[in-house]
Each structure stands twice: as C-alpha cells, then as structure tokens.
Image (cartoon, rainbow, N blue to C red; front, side):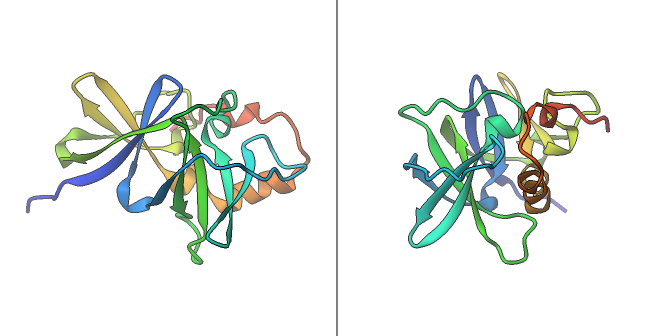
Length: 169
C-alpha cells in the first residue's frame, strides 16, 4: 500500500528551520501586540485577542531554553489547536518567520534520532531529509502540552533554562 505525501509548515527560529504537520495549524497571523500576564514563566509571552477569543502565546525559542525571540518584520504567530486538549483550545507560538509549506513523501521522513539535538528528545517527532540538511519535525503534543505548561505556570517563577536539558531516548 502506497502512503500519501503529507504537508508540513516550515518556520524559522533564529538560524534553524523546524517543521510541523500542516493539519495542526489553524492560522498564521502577523505579530500582534501582546498583553503580558504577570508572574508567568518567560516562555509565556502573553495573550492575544483573536476574534474575541483569548489565545495564550508561547515563545517557542524560550520554551526550547534559548533567548527570547526578538520581534522583527517577518515575526508572526502560528495559531494551532492544542494537540492534547479535548476542548481544542487555540494556542499561539511566536516564530521568526514562516518559510514555506512543503509536500513531503514518507521516504523523506526519518524516525527521531537517539542523540541530543539541543532540544528535549520528546519534543522531536521525526527528521525530514532535505538536500541542504535536515529539518526537525516537532511533536507539538509534547512541546505545547497544556498539562506541562499549566504545571510550569503554576510553579514558582524561576529561570526556565532547565527546559533545554536534553532527555535521552
């Protein structure tokens, strides 16, 4: 049985390109002004009003234990529906820019490697082989787990650097 191609949204964070399955994307919006929420971890940049709905916005770079995204002309918010929430609540992620939507054949996708990538291993779903290197396909259910995010928000505010520790496996 032949497997169908899948589409992935490619976006940049700093000098790196990451991908997510297009079916996880609700919309892409120009970077709006955010309302900050006091006493939340650094990765929780604030909330936006999206047609009357309050949407939390996560700085993906900070979630990965890196420095905060510097907002520039191409910066945008990718709105996804929470991958682990039965209510399908929207959640925004700040990225430096969306680069493309690509149609990928199954043979171009490799399983997640067993070695560190600078991210927690459970944040990586798979790896896309491209002519100019590899692109990490993110596991949004882990990266943006509402259960984990809520526990981090409820915990005393501390340095978020431990999020970048690489898990083995």
